[in-house]
Image (cartoon, rainbow, N blue to C red; front, side, top):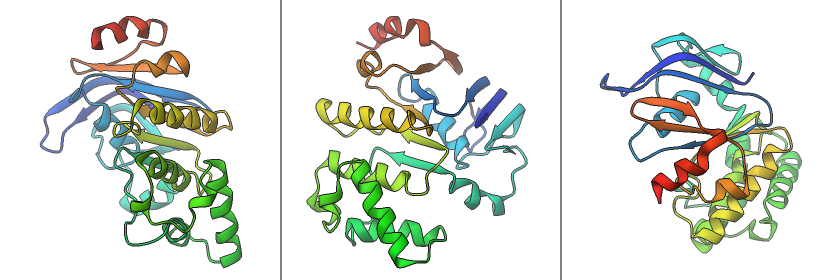
Length: 233
């Protein structure tokens, strides 16, 4: 089990409750969607998984074999190295090439040998179909290309889990579908993907486990998310 939440209560930093009695699990290779209207707690739930938002109330809150209700800050960097995190605004370093963006991450996570760094960069860019963009600057790429680079960055250290917060939010429908397909393929290699999205039509094409945030609760709706889709149309 990569993530196990039993009766977790999630609050904003000011103490305002967001989600109550959350029950949520992630195991190896799963592809999980979080759906729900803006402000219902999707991003907050994801933030607890990568330690940007603390959990104080829980029967059980385990991420990568660590109890996050008592997690010491010094352990967070090592745990984050087992994760890939993707945002809708890409968050690439604008002042350096794609090669140097990825090298920066590898060096920051302990890689030292130049030939190994170079080989890994080429490998991940090939996986996302971006090897010919290695010496481009971020501003020279389209939004979809930048998001592919962000995915390449997320898989550099062969993470156990990828957490993606609205990764298609700034993309056109065709490009969004390409990104979902790529993440689905990554999950089939054994890396779990947990993704929040408003792009509900893609749930039909690329099915996975579906949870909905609504009215302060999290509910698994895998078997009837088509009904949920109609509510958002």
